[in-house]
Amino acid sequence: MNISIETIDPAKRGTCPQELAFGNIFSDHLFTQVSDQGKGWHSAAIKPFHNLTLHPAASVLHYGQEIFEGLKAYRRADGGINLFRPDQNAIRFNHSADRMVMPRVDERFHVEAIRQLVEIDEHWVPNQPGSSLYIRPAMIATTPKLGLGASSSYLHFVMSGPVGPYFKEGFNPVSVYVSDTCRRAVKGGTGDAKTGGNYAASLFMSEQAAKEGYTQVLWLDALEGRYIEEVGAMNICFVYGDKRIVTPELTGSILAGITRDSVLKLAPTLGFEVSEQRLDINEVLAGIDSGDITEVFGCGTAAVISPVGRLRFLGVDKTVNDMKAGPVAKRLFDELTSIQYGKRDDPFGWVVPV
Ligand SMILES: *Cc1c(COP(=O)(O)O)cnc(C)c1O
Image 1 (cartoon, rainbow, N blue to C red):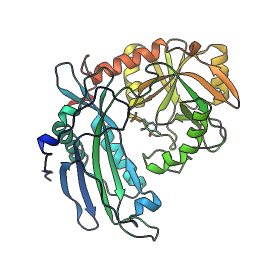
Image 2: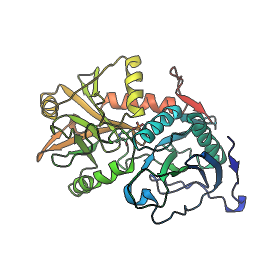
Image 3: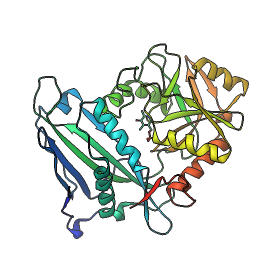
């Protein structure tokens, strides 16, 4: 399948600003394709960035049949551009599509659409330290019908925009609020799909946490309110001593992060032991008290690695590593970003040049 390409009038091309936040600036082009029942995917196109036109009864607007992804393009020192594990994003996009009864995309075509979009908006890939081009693929249900049921038409689109470092604190630890009332996802639910509703449902708690000075919410399992799942849009890791990295095992309600998977594969090559297991919040807090747990960090595409300096649970604050970034988080951040920016060897073949 071909992508029809219409590029923006060069006089109207935007420029990538020096000051970058996260997700508020968009590059010049948008990829779209459409699926209709019986016809499959068609009309693939890259066009100048534009608004979408939707019928007010489009099912996505009422029942939230939607999925998305997030990945980044990194500017190398030699001026080239790297994508990081885009194939894994495409596989997860289809996993989410299955769960939300949406049509699968051709994974190779999806990655190729991303590659072409980045190539066309090449000058939007920033080169300030810690910056990148964030790429947001999504799919929405577009059939105009208020009857509840799977849509018969879908729009798949990809946009992108330059981003700076995710947390305004930089590589300084964030404070995390452990929710003891709201739950993010339950086994059998949609927690392991990247679908909009999961995030809408999390806003109530994150607003409350933010009011009390916490940047992120840590979610516990919904059945017992006891086992650690993940943080906001990141998975979470605990460091025992100076060698052992432990992350919650995937239970079906946790989103299987590609950064998490990369940490699990990369860390052993750096001399760390890794394991995936059930982690009881009470045992973890006791481990922080006793000093067995030396570091806590989140991992996800947006922040890559984000140290956690403080956890609040049931009104009690625990400080981790004196609220300082620890050596394990720093090492993993440096090694992972070095692979992403093409500054070190890539023994896993994770990097795809654009
Ligand atoms: C996207 C996401 C992650 C991290 O996944 P990456 O592939 O590493 O970016 C973790 N948890 C949730 C809930 C997410 O949405």
